[in-house]
Length: 101
Image 1 (cartoon, rainbow, N blue to C red):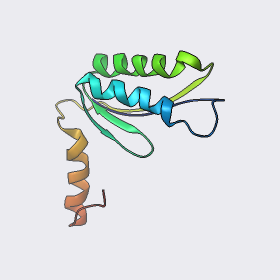
Image 2: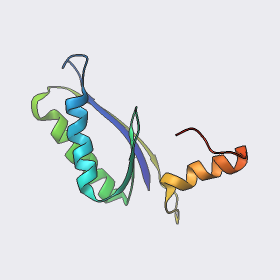
Image 3: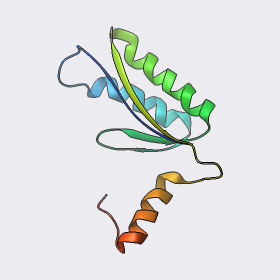
Image 4: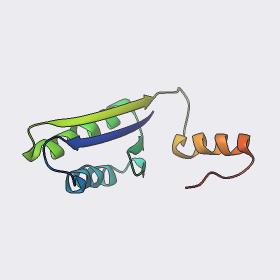
């Protein structure tokens, strides 16, 4: 399963990187294959692994915030592996060149 998520507190000002960093630290410590992007983070694993990680991220951001927003996109394709790279490679193959990373 591949999931991409964005998480942030509401009402904590305009710079939210300290809250986002809490979640990214948990993602890194999870041992799951992941890729951090400018607008979200993609994680690959089982349903239970990913949902457990999402709860930990939510709890970390909510420690001192009264409101937390999280968007989660899930692609659960049976038998798929290494989706963090295979999805991009599939598009690159059709384009005939690498995409900008």
